[in-house]
Length: 190
Image (cartoon, rainbow, N blue to C red):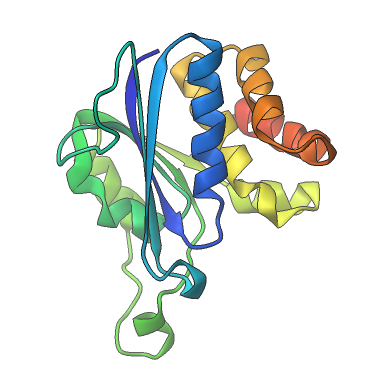
C-alpha cells in the first residue's frame, strides 16, 4: 500500500487513533509508515491535523501542499480548510458532521453553506459518511473515527480482515468489540 493521507478534525475526535490504525495496517502489510500530528487548540475545539505517509520507504512524515492522495475529515469545515493539500484528482472522505467554531458560536461569522458541493469541485471523488449518526446508533460517540476508517478502507479496496487486524493491534482489548462494530458499519457503507 502506498498513500499520503491527511487526517483532519477537531480536538477530541480521535485523529491520533485513526492514524495508529493506519500505521498498524502498514505494519501488517510490510510497508513503511510515518506519522506526524499537529495540534491547534485541540482541547478547545481547534483544528488537529495528522499526516500519515505509507510507502515502501518514507523519509519524511510531512505531507506538503498538493501532495495528499486522500483527505479523511472528521468534520466538514475542516475538510474544506485543508483542500489545498489534496492532489489533483484526490479523494476526500468526510464525516457529514458540523462542529461550530468559536467565531460562529459568538455570531462573528457564519458556518459556510454548500461545503460538500465545494469539496466536489476540488476533489476527484468525495465520499460523505454519516459517521456521527452511526456512532450514535452504536451507542458510543467516540467511535466516529473508526467508522471513518472503515469507510476509507473499503474505498481503498482493503479487505475487511486486514483493517480489522489493524484495529485489533491499535486498540485496547476491552474497546475492541465496540470499535469492531463501528469499523464494520463504516466498511459496509463505504
